[in-house]
Length: 108
Length: 114
Image 1: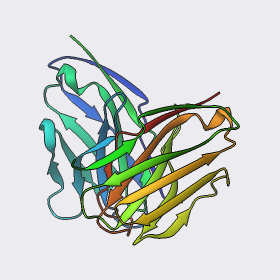
Image 2: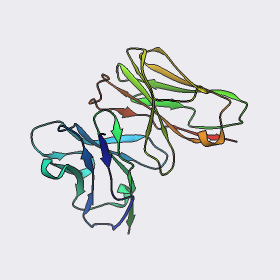
Image 3: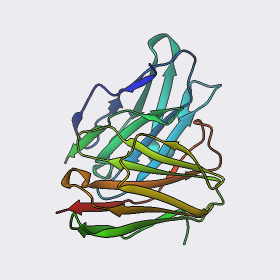
Image 4: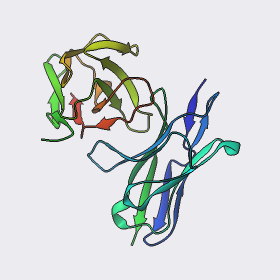
């Protein structure tokens, strides 16, 4: 069955540190891939998406993600985290399949 | 207003009440969705409407009844709910319904069932 896995339920980083959130997918073909962010009490906001072409995708708020077919991964990265990045992050593939989310906590 | 709006933002109801959640999208999209988000669970897709026709109904109990009177509005009618139905209910829209389109989400309605 098709699935999206976010192995890390909770990640804590210091402000200014780099960040990588993991997303793995299990699909027969290369899926469409998305990353969303959800701040407390809010809906999900699209950060970036990958359909085809360049495997490094730039998004909003300084985020980027890299599609790696060999690893079935689409990890989200940010070189320097800000306190306002504390939120929950969801990876999504096509057919509306979401991962379970990773909660990011940022310490000053 | 822009984007996807949801009202009310918070709702507390008893198990015998009847209430409705409203969603409105101002993006000119043709597909609308209801999701249930519970703590420590994946986002659960409840219903999908495409061009005002219901195209997905993922085994949702009949105490949840959706309505899509036009492409901009989506309702979720609630009756005789259970405490386990307490959750954040998210509405989303997309240009088309094909599983690959970008979805735009509303802020959600936090529902508490007493």
